[in-house]
Amino acid sequence: MQLDLYKSGFVSIIGRPNVGKSTFLNKMIGKKIVITSDKPQTTRNNILGIKTDKDAQIIFTDTPGIHKTKTLLGQRMVEASYRSIKDVDVILFMTTPVKEVLEGDRIIIENLKKYKKPVFLVINKVDQLKKFNDIDLTIAKYMDLYPFAGIYPISILEDINVDKLLSDLKKALPFGPKLYPEDMLSDHSDRFLCGELIREKILNLTKEEIPHSVAVVIDSFKENEENSSYIDIYATIYVERDSQKKIIIGKNGELIKQIKEKSINDIKRLIDSKVHLDLWVKVKKDWKEKEGTLKALGYSKDNF
Image (cartoon, rainbow, N blue to C red; front, side, top):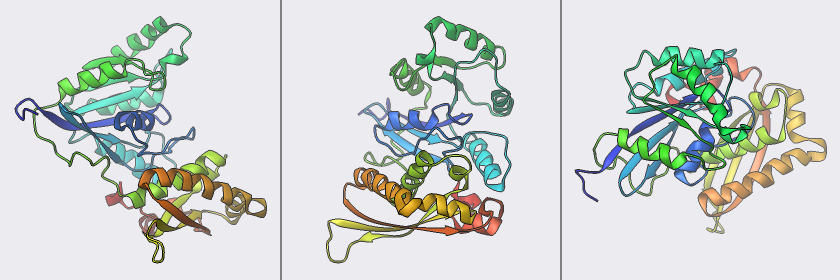
């Protein structure tokens, strides 16, 4: 590695909910470090994903989807997304193929004008188009709104144009040394990521208001005292109402059993260890609206 030719820098991935930001980050890192689901606002925290190659180290920030907020938690999430832009080298603004620019994207673009940063327009999910050339309509609509440094129609799932985006992204970064150890993939601990994996299973197994009313706290994460090949994890699932607690537990405890089994499978892969997992469900009424409760559950301003 020639230090004078090596590149390193920070890249923020920003956009509406469900455009594929977290899936893109996992693709870049080559390992699942952020959770995904088809539910809006799946990502709640800014999470760094570190991609280290022989010619560059890219520190990606996955951000919560920018949306119209209805709760204090939602407000924190949107603030965190915009805050992530301030000190980065490049911004990836991700959207999807549309015939007309959505109002949410217009709001994001207006905010991007405040920052003098190169912005790449990344139009994900082009594999869903009947004809690839249909993307030209979307490109024209967005070009009228902002002088993007580059425009990239991609499909993360079909691996379309992802390498081209990565190559141009590296070119846009400043020269500099590695900023993180080569084997480091994220700035968040395994403890945090395990809590997120449990929350992901709840998102994927429930519907209606449940996914947005759930918080997961890892109460204990330590090596088993009798068998060092196991990690003992004790976690509490918080909901807002008694009725939600009943849904999470399920008839005869069937749903909480599914959540546990699916969580264990992913946690094993994450920490490369056998796992003993205990889950508890508790009610904290209207936790998303209370400053003190948000802080207690790990959603203080400093934790975004």
